[in-house]
Image (tube, rainbow, N blue to C red):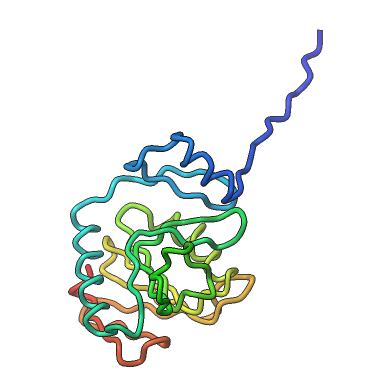
Length: 188
């Protein structure tokens, strides 16, 4: 008897379905899950080095940029109907309701920052291209293990067209915020 191959079907979720599952109790408040390209992904726990970098950046960005922006930490960003990642930091346009009325979308974002302790490959391969496709003007990938910060600009459907790496002894600068300057050594 010949066995027929079975094609495995994968169910991809929408942001709406993802929210319904959360409201229905499928995920607990402490679950670290993100929706990316319709797939629900469990994120790795945050280590102290990663947390310290995010804390430092939160303080520094809020101090340097002040009330001209909203610094959002590890909160959802609706990229499209099938993706709702939770970047480490978002620099958002100010909004009177502080986004209580709905999660930000790419039009609200000036800068997205991911901190990679163990997730560098995933962030580079899966998240950064999606940020570019969504039109987010600038993205930073802080690579803790490499003592470097990669800055991406000029988004396109094929990814970011401009890339610059800042290393130890340098200061990271931003096209979106020319006055912003952060020492790489303080981040990594």
